[in-house]
Length: 214
Ligand SMILES: Cc1ncc(COP(=O)(O)OP(=O)(O)O)c(N)n1
Ligand SMILES: Cc1nc(C(=O)O)sc1CCOP(=O)(O)O
Ligand SMILES: [Mg+2]
Image 1 (tube, protein in one colour):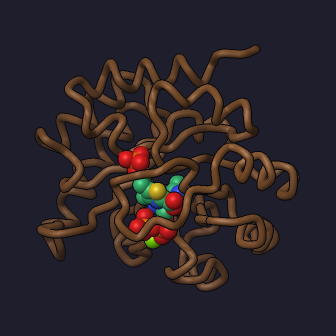
Image 2 (cartoon, rainbow, N blue to C red; image 1 turned 45 degrees about the horizontal axis):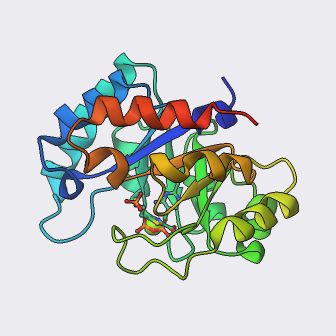
């Protein structure tokens, strides 16, 4: 499968984002049809060291069972240690050139962009996909930039050619379809699944929205 297809419903999550056991939440989301997963263990009380690595390995095994690629956020060393399928880095993280030097050849490398220039540069640097956002206001990432809106997302789509594009920030069931219409190949979410009462149903409903056509 091409990376574009994996972007359809991309769950990002760490233990801080969950009201229940994160392994339970992830398994429910996998059963509900998520297509890609990113382990993002950040914020107050986040696991570190051996505890972080243990959770990463457990999550990777769950993802394997559902044939869903497992990516790690920011932490290139951890991604390599646990045999992840890839890594996601932002503008303040390790540069893609350095990531490529250190990681296996077939590693999926995603790069964040908050504007057209960053997106075009990430595409030229060889990112496998671009995570563009925030599209809408989000309470999940405290240092998120000003929302780019659907117009900003559509402009990025126009200017990055064929590079796979996933939208992020404030995406929920009610706005997922318009994000796809604006040109994203998929949606990436934290709270819409990990903060919901039923992660399985939430994943199913989001997936349904990404499949609606005009
Ligand atoms: C798919 C996707 N897109 C964007 C981000 C944000 O990355 P970054 O700007 O590095 O912020 P943190 O997530 O590291 O706080 C992402 N993680 N995933
Ligand atoms: C991790 C992250 N990155 C963003 C960016 O704009 O790059 S917004 C964001 C948080 C997304 O969480 P939610 O789906 O709950 O809004
Ligand atoms: Mg980052």
